[in-house]
Length: 469
Ligand code: GLN
Image 1 (tube, rainbow, N blue to C red):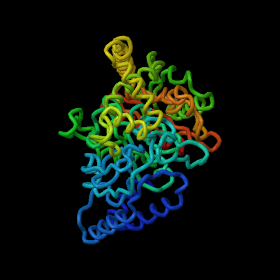
Image 2 (tube, rainbow, N blue to C red):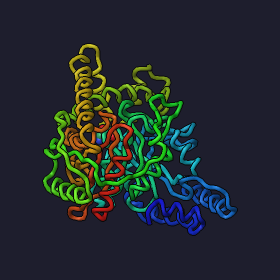
Image 3 (cartoon, rainbow, N blue to C red):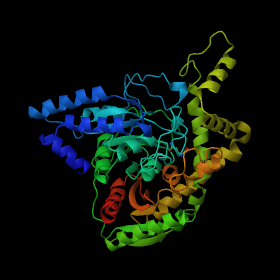
Image 4 (cartoon, rainbow, N blue to C red):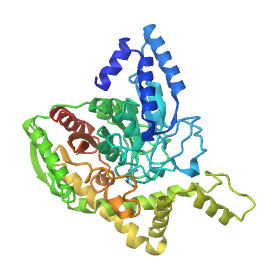
């Protein structure tokens, strides 16, 4: 049953929210070994489900998400719950307010089931940098589920949740969605409020949906999108208030060779087959070129390091963090605090970010990066003038073994080579499963113009229907 059909069935009283919640809670128990959740709110979810059923029975109007079970990445603030970011430094941090997306989900009667595991502070592509232990891939628990929104993807893939939210700064929704075989979507920068999202790279971060089908992703995005006075970057266009897929026939689909060069041959082949199916469905294929996409990894990482090192300053044990030993001199106390509370990858990023933004070096590194970012953004805009959507593989490789790529950060960074461009350009991009290789899902990525998510959803829905996935 499609997510939207499930929502309708609950709304009409054909199915109860309680039964749905019980089924999801059972799946949470059964899949504990995948380590998808940091905290589960089973009892509260059941209570809320019963309340919704009672309202349906009385014939009261219920919200768009009534009775659907939603999991949230643990960098999204839920009032009165821990928001750990999977870091030791925030192990005991309880959010004092709701993120805007949380308010919107609650207002539409979505049922929040728990906070999901992730790479510490959203830094990673594997889910292995969590201070709460690695999350695992449901298709093979020896393999990574992708990251950094690992648990959210796993939860949806295994039926522990109907929907989930993640954050995507350089690919953190699309990577795990692709590795777990679900739909994941990064909206246009500014389409969804970041108020209450613990930031990583503020010019790149976006909250976005996971779902088992494109319809579910559109439903959740419709719920959370829109202008918010608490996030000045938000804007709302009419198309962003109700997302819907249109007809694929006659759509122009752009293909850029740069996105296939570093991709595993088997994956490129599968994507090629799926592209043919889009053509059979009536889409027109056009060649486009985005040469700077080859530099997406350095552009993304240098931008993010700079913003991340600044975002991390507040974890000093005084404002946020573990309790500080007040008997120590301040500099020593802060340094101890961070030494103990933060993981290796986080420290690496803070150091590089601090370095490239230092007065002496910022012209050579940070300023240059910003120039390259503008160039890549322009190339994307030009390419998207020639077509309605650009289709690429989502990931250049299949999920790797847990523990691999951890000793070589650059190898891990390269996993973002196909996803980071969308964040750099601020445009929407989503992924849907289009094939399998040795029992592992392969995701196809679709980019569209700024505020044109409907075009991306149209292609994703065609992928879903035509590849039967
Ligand atoms: N994998 C990327 C990184 O390590 C992306 C992270 C993200 O999107 N949050 O930075």
